[in-house]
Image (tube, rainbow, N blue to C red):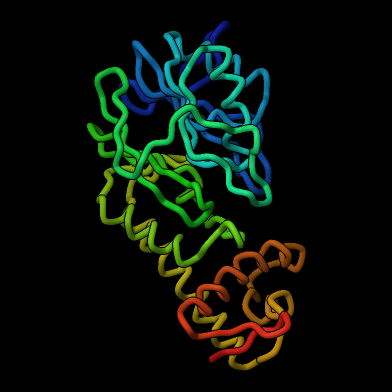
Length: 278
C-alpha cells in the first residue's frame, strides 16, 4: 500500500511496521533508486538512508513519525550509506554497520557507533533484527533478518531484476557465492533488496544467481583455455558476447573476480599481467 497526502511523502507499507521509501538517485547502477527501509512504529530503525539528498533525509524523518533510535547500513557504497552520519546526528540515533574498507567507491565518512557480530540481534519495537554477515559484493556487507516475518533485507547482496558487480579487490567472488548459499540456507520467506521490488521466491532467485555465476565461471575457464596469455580486459569479448562494448570496463571487474576465484581454486594463474589456465 502506498501512502500519499498533501503533506506526506509517498512511501510503501510492506507489512505492519515495515515501510519503504525510494531515494531519488535512479541510474544505470541503482535502477529506480536506493530502497530506504523504516522498521518499527513507536521507535524506528532506518536501514540504508542512501546518498546525501536533503529532501530524502527530510522525508525519512517525516515518515518515521516517531523517534529514530538507530540508523543502520548494509554496506558503505556511496548509494547506501552517506546520509547515515547526518541523519544519526540530527536524530541522536545510534549508527550501526561495519566500517568502510580501504577500497575504491567507499563512503569514508561512515564511522559506526556499533558493529553487530554475525548472528547478533537488535530489538526494535519488540521485534528482533539479526545481522547476517554476507561479504562478497563488498567485504563489509551485512544482510539483516527480521525474525518475526522471516524477511531478509539484502542490500546489494541480492537485488531485484539484475545481478550485481563484484569489483576486486574488495569484491570477492568466492565469498559472494558462499554468502549466497548462507542466505539460501536460512530459507527466508521474502527478500527485501536494496534496489527494486520484494523478491517473493527467494530460493529460486538465489539459485539463479549461483547458477549464473558458475556458468559465467565456466565460460571464463573455457575462454582462458582457448586464449591463454591475455589480460583480463582482452578476455572480456571472449566471455561477455552478450554485453554491449560500452559496458566492457564494468564487465572486466566481474571477469577479474572470476579469474581470481579460479586462481584461488588452483585452476588459473597470472604472470606479468596475463592469465593462464592451470
